[in-house]
Image (cartoon, rainbow, N blue to C red):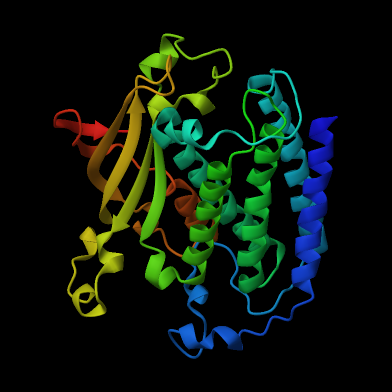
Length: 322
């Protein structure tokens, strides 16, 4: 079975990455040049509810529990994709044509790949910290896991006649993984610049306008908006931060993209660009609860319904846009 083959390849790569990296020690001195205080690297500032360690203290039952859960979820996800997408004839490995691949859906699916990889990398890194790996190792293991997690989809696509291996998808996957990794390595510099998503059920989905191979919500690109958000407080110079009102610290700006009228023709449609407010949920004071911090960080991948203005195809103001 094609899916079983790539499932086992994925598990082998994951374990190979873990144990190869595990041969390295937990020496943090190489990153001391990036320290903010007391010679510690910047990633000691990560505050998402997961343990921050300089040396790994792996709990075997957590490790095997995490890997087992990951394997089961991966098998379930691939099976769901098989029913949703992979009902087309299978052929030999081939690449999808570059130019049509780039024009399709106004690159909405490329931003989706980037966001998927970004989210998967962050979540995997959190899981490795929970398992007991040092902060440094958790970041790199998370990057490997996030990249392999979505790479397997590209490999499966490569054997279906309707699709093919997409170098562009792989590139956007890698961008998402890379930025998530850099964001954790340097949270003091990049923590306030985040990728987010918002979604509402589109009219195209409600009216069943998508093709037979794009019937699930995961393909409802007309309802998705991909956002780049900037928290104003976090990117300010320290001299300005000192006098910044506390109630303003969660607020920032967001630039987003969505598409319309692509359900019947993926090479047509219009790109829509938005500018709006953003709210950083992690800056809501909830005490020192690790669970609370974890939930806030998880919810912060979503841009909340907030005012926005569409700046393409005529200016349109939205009191709340999601």
